[in-house]
Length: 233
Image 1 (spheres, one colour):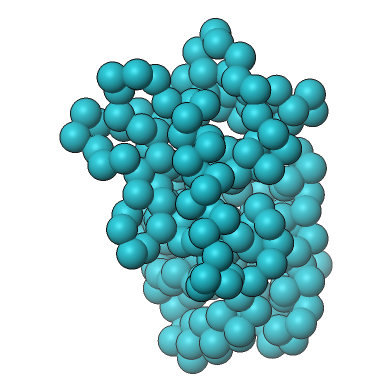
Image 2 (tube, helix red, strand yellow):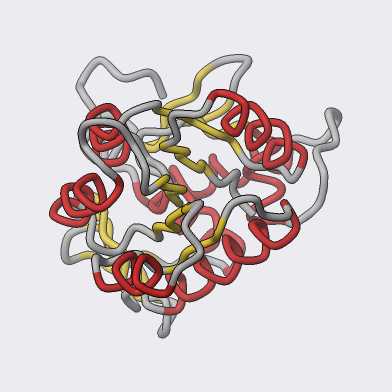
């Protein structure tokens, strides 16, 4: 699975540090903001997968922050954190557009379970097609196109291209790609990722145009739906 990025919008530093440690131990990458304004910016400009949002924020409160995020990213899973255990606040959180809520203090195991449940629901709601630039994948029929030209991909090539399309513009390490597409840990002696990236490039790239898959030497790869002419292949 790709590394999931969780945005924590919380003004209590001790809670943020605890979540960074606990969620990091479960393999998540944690970003944080200590106010609603910065939280909205991160949620709508960074490729975050889940938001943990405190209700009792200063100035722009959790409900206002939620409304602003929802206006830009309707499908982003958002879990509200509240110290208020009364029914009215829980109902208000859900009616404001939150996917779930959790009352502080909470057990890390329960939070992780709620995150997994939200992201499963989000995955199930995804479209049967993915598009980036002029690449299109039909996930149900396992068919692919660049523009109007059909691309014949093996099952592994299709999974690799799907992973790139789901993560446009991100640096993807070989370890991340192996975990997501082959589902086993990184073997530093293996070049299977490089081999399959070459296979996919040959099928999706067009003569005389830069590759959509950029090699970042020593780091991994980045998928650019609209590559610049100066991109490295």
